[in-house]
Length: 584
Image (cartoon, rainbow, N blue to C red; front, side):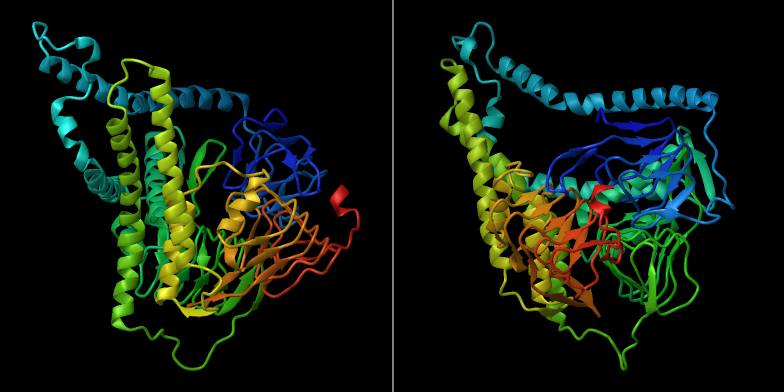
């Protein structure tokens, strides 16, 4: 962090790493990053080590600022280029020192209030222990012959309850999840609706209400993931959804989201115009997705799409297009005519398969799997109490043994549920094309939930020799000296084959699937020896030749293979004409 400098009232949006370290060049490179006062870095933008952003400059979402480049004004693209007349309608200015001081005073008061609200939650475990100790002492009065030096801090009622603790832990986990979703709905319904265009001070009461609503909805969205109940939940929160919508976890503000009939929206898209800029929470417009729109992964659509539109991968559209039935891909977006197929495109699915899809994605994946995780934790506690009921002597040794029990239970549950059962549900024998509501898709969703969100690896292997073994357990074929700085870089591990000396940098990923006409399609991907996938780059159903380099934030077009010993950049990626692009 000592190489990263961010000025006053600057905004750096997530979700990508802001780091001065670069591994994509085959070695560890350290260069400083500077973001000026009042500057704005859009969502999922990447700042390569060695770049700088001037005061009050604006880097649009999903853009990439290369090393040695200085952004002044408004910039967009991969790599960035100046946007002509980009600030003509809304010119930006450097915040005054007086505004900075005023914001810091209000923010300090707001932060102190948040810390005070967190203190009771942090102290809750200690409070519960103190209550148990007090109740246990009341069971053994001072004139009792019971040795108070070795009395159990858990009261008799709790001790008799221990055998049933794992079962009740399952029930409580499910109830807590349900209460969290219900509380999110109540917050969205009780707080005032957001009516764009609007702007509030971030430190104001109204600004904090909008921020609170958005934070709770997005937490719930990350919890629900690919559940079929997401459209219903979003409607309860205030969004307007049509019929037949499929949607995964997104960044949304429900009051300003309108989704038409028959839309398909994959994961991790930004479907809101809400931004924080120079201390203000701004919502300039409603996000309106027209009927039968298709939205892939990791797109930024603050204003939405017209009817029949297609939006691929890592695509940024600051404004809503006017023409229907067009396709968009990359940043800046490449525009093409969306193919229109003859005849009805409705998916033919049996009622049994449809019911199982809803039950699997909305009950098993959300509640039952997390309930099992709670049972594992409770079972660890019960086992530690059974084997080591007293700690009067050899306290340190007993403590180590108790910690070992928790570790063994954590590793065992990971191996059973994530590795073995996850691989059983989803492996290289999966069909290459399956309907959206088919058993293949439900098994795939459950496997993703097990491996990446519930029973995650108990070991931190990113950037180490063991990371390759972690991916091999999930089905990937990986050669020697594999180096990766992303814990979930291989989206579809069973279909990926990686050669020797391959580097995958921060936030980069390799995926082998796509949804086309509500069909989940897989195709194997091969990464050649000495290939380098740099920060936030995406390989999408494309092979990478030996020694090929994919520059930061670049995205491959499906089927556009990267030739050996070539450098590619852009979204969509094309061969870089400048041979010195890596050493800029």
